[in-house]
Image (cartoon, rainbow, N blue to C red; front, side, top):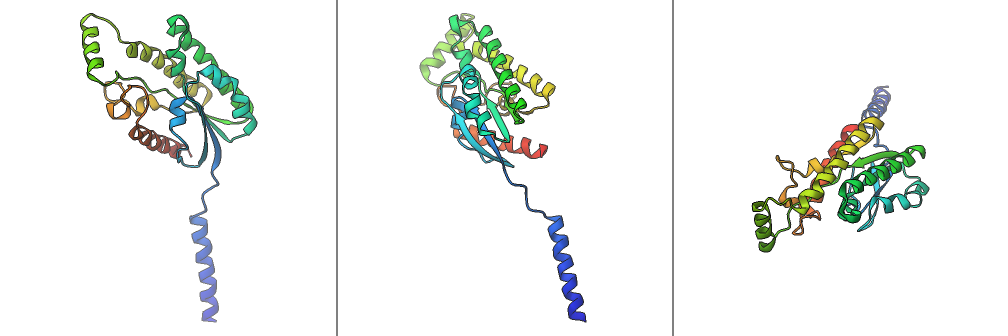
Length: 225
């Protein structure tokens, strides 16, 4: 009799433990679409997501939009992560960065809408800013430029990158999207990208930078699960 009671008790305790510690839900399929920054992130380990990286070096938002149906919608992922608009600013026709920023906003909003209509959860990421390239000649040129009152190319690009980033923050709030604020995640107290997160060209992201992005994104996504 005692042995039978103990057996029943053991089964009950096992069921209670199972109820208190359920198996985690299966990872949801996610597609990361963007340009070289996205491509360089490879397939980050993010909580609850199995990420497929479809970043392509050099692309602008118009090119992302052109392949969005094929590379995202037709794949039917649970989640899409949209990251990247700096190439629009780099290659602004006739140097008109303001117009290029406006076009990037329209393309990003169209991608978001397309994903929403397909029932795909959208995560948008802000763009990281540029730093001055490293090297003695670049440093000297920067000093002389400031003495002459000139605004550096990197500063001009960053103005419009931040403009589009503000648009993404507003869009995420209006559409209740998940926002990964990569600009702020890699910035120092002054709002500039930290030196350890930028390669010598001042643009591309170091391995330390990607590790910081993964840690930041993991914390953000875990908090929303």
